[in-house]
Length: 234
Image (cartoon, rainbow, N blue to C red; front, side, top):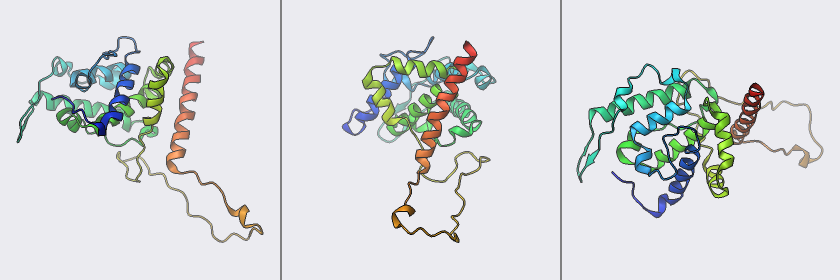
């Protein structure tokens, strides 16, 4: 089932193409610069991307026989027909991704990616989230994150600009997708201070939003991770 071409999703399509250009830079990448959106979200292709970016331990334990071939999803006006093989593939992909995100508290700001909606219905919103997650993993938590950061610099200025516009998939609410990880909260302000400023302007201050803090921490972590990996290679 092809993706619909409409103006509402044109920016997302440009963004996805830029991410595919970035993924194609990795050695032995299953993605080529000419890859179509339909090819990109095939279960077998996504499994190969996970194998590329994740450690062997994270994708081990799953039967690769499930990903030998894709089964076409058939649909008509009233119904959609999907094979048990495709459903099992989606289940495995969801489990692999959840395990990776769950084990890294720095990735707990990601919105939930519904691979069923993505693969079965070609949902553009889920496609955008997939690319945001892959880019964050490929430049931060992947075994090839140092390479991912370097390959980003190989892209055209236009591709880099588009990716930067979409790179922060932060959850706006306090709801935690992954139970067991503590919610971040600020302690209540102390209103019993004995200090009173004579100048009203001195009482004003800049309060950093949670999203800004997460973005800043992520950028710091990226550079720390890159410095660490470069130091190990020296």
